[in-house]
Image 1: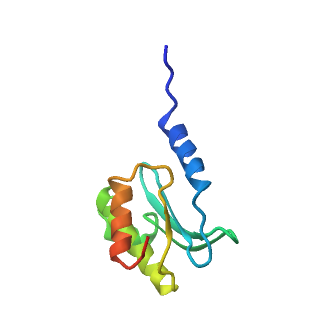
Image 2: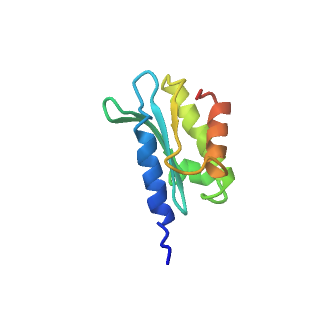
Amino acid sequence: MVSKESRQKVRVKKHRRMRNHLSGTAQKPRLAVFRSNNHMYAQIIDDTVGNTLVAASTLEKEVKAELEKTNNVDAAAYLGTVIAKRAVEKGIKTVVFDRGGFIYQGKIAALADAAREAGLEF
């Protein structure tokens, strides 16, 4: 019988491989995205120091108030605009996109596209 690894283990393995090549600096921090079954989270991280510079998630009151559901493509797009606006306010223009081992489609792609439209470059 062929045993398959769980999707979660495959995703974590992909993310670890990606993190060998992706690293955020002070000039070009890393935009890390995580999605659970119920919510999405986005952080802009400076890996040289280990600091989170900007963060946003669908758990926050002001973000949640704007959304009908917190786990669909519309929520991801809104979260992308929120994180990009907060980053631009802090003076961050360019980032490295870290999709967290998730496939670049659906919610992850919507978040990335919305962040690009709101002013981030990657």
